[in-house]
Amino acid sequence: MAGTVVKTCLSPLALLTRRLSAPEFITQCCYHKKVVDHYENPRNVGTLDKNSKNVGTGLVGAPACGDVMKLQIEVDDHGKIVDARFKTFGCGSAIASSSLATEWVKGKSVDEALTIKNTDIAKELCLPPVKLHCSMLAEDAIKAALADYRRKQQDDQQEAVRASV
Amino acid sequence: MLSYNSLRIVCPFRSLLHPNWLMTNRQTLTCSAHCVSNNLTKKDTWQRQNNLKPTGNERKLQYSTYAASSPRNYGTGQFKLNCWNCKQPLDQTPAFFCMTCKAVQPPEEDISLFNIMDCDYKFSLDTHKLQKRYLHLQRSLHPDNFSQKSVEEQEYSESYSALVNKAYHTLLKPLSRGLYMLELKGMVIEEGTDSGADPEFLMELMEINEALDEVKTPEEANKIGQHTKGKLAVLTEEIDAALLKGELQSAKALLAQMKYFANIEEKVKEKLSEFM
Image (tube, rainbow over all chains, first blue to last red; front, side, top):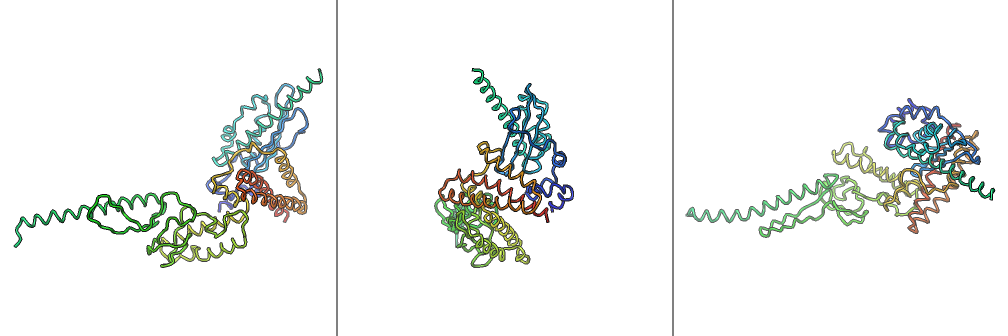
């Protein structure tokens, strides 16, 4: 019964997420319209060149639900994030969380991006309690991407030091 | 002719008997309230033997059986239950029906799903046998069989039938079966990111998911489906081995991997149905 209600209001989602029959869905009629918006009009889906030294790649997984999320950032020479891309395979809330994350990191410095919290993402998307872990996944993906970028920068600097010696 | 004085002597003597008898009853009442409040279903049964000993304040109320409010082992039959209807002891565990009056019984608290489905407590399970047991149980437990019976019986058949459904679906698939076995040992896969995940493994998952996203023909989708099935079969064997050895952490990590591949398998099915 919940399935038919959902199908009438969210037909594209019905095919692509298996969460519809889960018990939490019956208590919550539909995904919040912000989540639906990010799902139907995702921002920044795609890939950046992971071999580039300006690109940090964060790859995270949530074993309880089996969601996988990749978030990439491109940082300019002044430490500002100029581009971000994501690819998420999971429920609508996970997709929306990562889509929003890529929107938020753009234009921020590497240090500012570290301050993005999962609670902010959850609040913005009005995520129900059972989907809070999706916003945590997005926060972890941002941090993983930033850590990867930092590591690349450190490796670069060490190489430069060695080359100059 | 009895004098008034002799009457007075008789009365106090009788009052000596009564207080103890009353106390017995009061104790009984308090105990029954205690038992009822401790049990989820009010119909869990106990019997008391009426031992009205007029002496001794430390009266021990005796029960032939009582529904345990203390932790119970899975179906060891440590605490015997009585039928809520005819009060006869239920000799089996799990007892679906009373042997004497044939009334349907409520499900026991904390009973193992393996016990209900009469399956050995191990990861490798005969799903054919499981299905036969499921159909056999539902034939007698389904609420449709109880539409003309009492309200209690209708309620009990509903809860037992639902529990049998849950047991069947949990034990049918290796993933849910494995997760349930971990749960019985007090282990759950936590929500949130797996910080210990192998990046190579996640990369592999990403690539499979991306490839599946881009398939143009059912054959391509099937190819991914076959590859995933292969992975799942290998994982099933590995989990079986880990659980047999009692390596729970290892089993937990393998079940997490299985979850990812199970998701991919579902997506393959959805893709194939799109092509139809």
